[in-house]
Image (cartoon, rainbow, N blue to C red):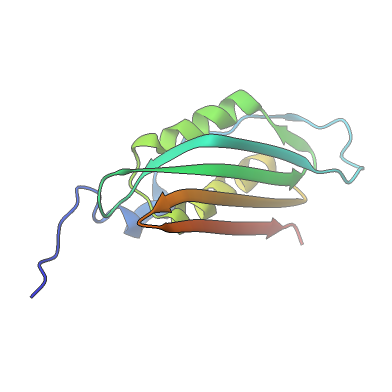
Length: 133
């Protein structure tokens, strides 16, 4: 019989939509009538595996078409740093980043992609997309 291993991060996943995250600041877009795409990326993203407690490393890419607001990059960097000590599944973190990003900037369209480094020989890529309809 295999014994279930408890992690200090067990239970966090059920309320992941409700954890308090830092705000993402915005500034007023002077070209809301134009359709253009902004791409922001980092290969320094870290979070914690909720099963093992070990760090997960990823490249995070955000593409969006601004409407009235653009994101302020320093605040977005600080927002991403918040996850460094959070136990969260890859699928959850990408969807949560998208939710918070959309809530703050209200874009016409946004896509968040996370490419997580190999763990046990498996690379995980998660995409989440938002369309303002």
